[in-house]
Length: 309
Image 1 (cartoon, rainbow, N blue to C red):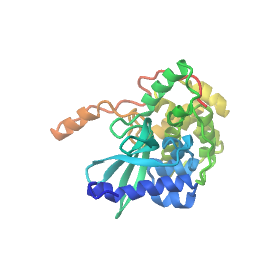
Image 2: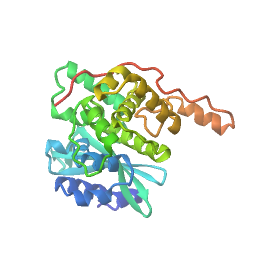
Image 3: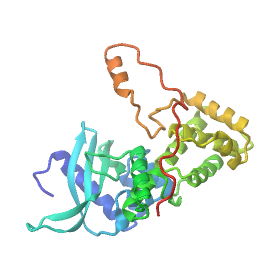
Image 4: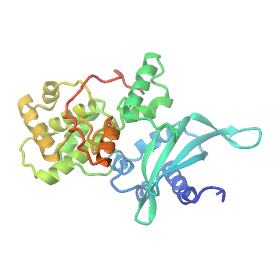
């Protein structure tokens, strides 16, 4: 490792390399301790196994050598490393890699150690959101390129490319239903992860009793439809789960009330709040921020209509 790297890069580079080697060797036991507990990466691994990490890092394209091309940081608690897969060397003997196939590994401090908290299939300075990935996939599908493996990482984010649930995390009866149902509805890994986290926080707060888990499962999926600004109909979701629309409406409103949900809820929504900057400015000035946007505001439709792969 170069001594010219900043101290934070020297401290975190071994973690990135250890993660990539563990994924290459399919060593699940080695992967788990490298992940930040309760982070996006940790939940994706617990629910889906190695698949999300492998695809988000473009490891499905089967290059053996990689380069950690760039580092960045946000304060003292977050470091970002950009990973590229080596395709050859240039005239000066330096590693050459395909800029279309780079990912960014996010790391955070956990007690005295660094752990991996997230992986984004894009350059360090241009991370891609789920909504942006949906738009890119819409374009490539229209161009007839949606089945190219290059786009599979975006499919994992959006649900256009579905992964089997191979993780070892046990699910309760409600979670098992909506995890499968949301997969059938083409939700991506980040949204299914958020749905599980939301249900568990509700369950811990409300201690719900029920005879038919299908009703709560449908309610969870409908809430994620609202968070995603999708146009899916509550009645059709209820029908798929074998529940009545009125019972689903009652349960999703119950979850909304117990957890205090709003449209851009940072705990569960895949979308950033466009008013967050204004809210922060008002708070800094000691002024009252505007009220939260009600859940269900501004829905449209999904931005792609076919799966890749």
